[in-house]
Amino acid sequence: MINEDDLKREYLRKWDDKYFTTFKFLNLLEKVFYGSNAAREALVELCGDEYVQRMTFDSYFYKKLASGNRWEDAKIAINTISSLVRNEYPA
Image 1 (tube, rainbow, N blue to C red):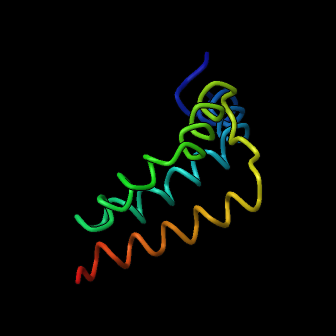
Image 2 (cartoon, helix red, strand yellow):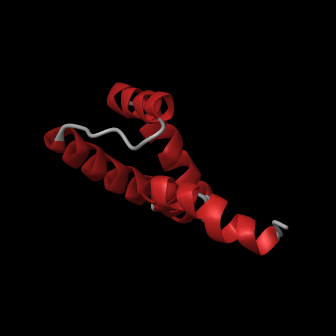
């Protein structure tokens, strides 16, 4: 008879292996952007970017992290850091 341990070991492992990077990335986003109001404001700015919206849609649609343009990824990282700093330490 199948019990909960069997489900965790066999069934869930398949999904955990398949979506491990997605869950890790979402966990990272949660830790970075849900720690303070300033970080949440930075997330709002980040989500306004067309490139971020496209990557989000592609990731959702294809059920895996979308591979993006490294230059655009670097620009988003710089913009995100500057937004975090700007919202944390307003002038």
